[in-house]
Amino acid sequence: MTGAKLVKGVYAAAATPRQEDGALDEAAFRGQLEFLMERGIKGFAINGATGEYCVTTPAELERMVTIAAEATAGRGAFVCGVGSAGLRGCVENGRIAVGGGAAGVLLPGPHFFPYQQEDLEVFCMRFAEQVPLPVLLYNLPQFTNGFLPETTVRLIAQCPGIMGIKDSSGSLDTLRALSAPGVEACRIVGNDSALVQALGEQVCDAVISGVACVLPELLLAVWQRGDEACRLLGEFIQAVSPFPVPWALKWVGESRGIAAARFAQPLSAARERQGRDLQGWFEGWRHGAGLRA
Image 1: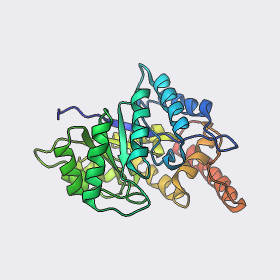
Image 2 (image 1 turned 180 degrees about the vertical axis):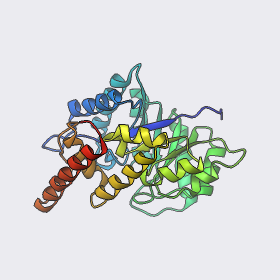
Image 3 (image 1 turned 135 degrees about the horizontal axis):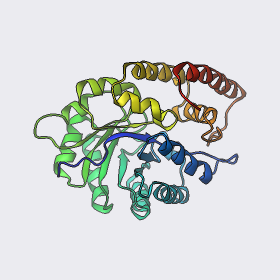
Image 4 (image 1 turned 60 degrees about the horizontal axis):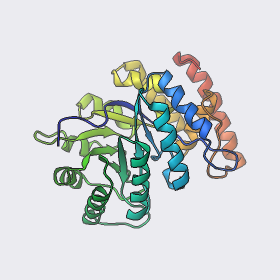
């Protein structure tokens, strides 16, 4: 493995805008990428947890990678989430990512059933054999089978196609293990609440941030270790914590004019009110923080 890192700095984990019927809103997806690039973001992760990969169809993914490739051509790069319940679905998604020009893929463990770590090792190695793109493991133990630090280190050491990990667990144990002398890997924070500590310990090369998909300027400032930006990030995370993360980010994104807040799942009247309350809070908070529309 070379010393080059596949992902560096701040990447935005893109949301997946939806139409009223729940289908992909292609124009809004393209507009989101343009909004972020205008504000300094040059890297994206599409179809990850923030993008609600569990409800993305293969046809939608094909359109998303096509749009991302067109929007970022000569201006940025993107990696593509390929998560599915099993190997076949992940490989299918991986081949779509290859055909669409992704720089690499994010591979979470399979979901629904609990598997042992040796099962995950075989799963990842079989995937890497079939998809000719750099692989970043995607540790998402809240929703999938998670990778233990020792499993991650072993996979990166033994499988040339696996280049690093996006760790969304909230723990820094894996990133610390990958920072040991003699270990070469791309170390990515995938949980915004762990970013400030990871920067302080110097155990990350990048962040793939859901918050960055609606507040790119804030995450760029946090990456530069701005104390006020770090404080504001903590406030924002606390405010959105009552929601599924993609829902909260869509409400905020609508407030910023990025895309209408539409969802793959139906919302109750109480949730609608809660979302509108979040938008009201955000407008006041945004002006106090000096963030432009």
